[in-house]
Length: 152
Image (cartoon, rainbow, N blue to C red; front, side):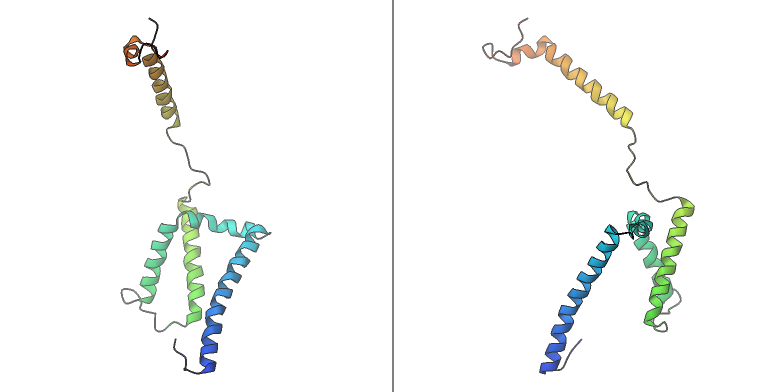
């Protein structure tokens, strides 16, 4: 965006630059107040979508490309700007319904698969290391006066 090279144009540009940062800080503060306040239950509905961020991004990109650009309906020049909010909310609702129907939303805590096998391996290694230390094969490793050699 270009402004005229006058005092009012420079002032308008400065106010615009400062205003965008103030707006961003205000949005962050509103989100944090919602997070620590009673609105946290509302925000928990967004958690599954945040856990599948890459899948959701690819799905939203495919939907928008099909709606707005020439491979699909080509509505980019005909839709007003305010129509982007209902379109975005509709895509979000479709994603949430699909996640619930398919059950793709991962659990809140990661699953520990194969822990029993890892425990067994760890115990076997510990037993083997104790066995190696108690055998006489390692007795020649240490100098005789160090106190570390076995007395066998």
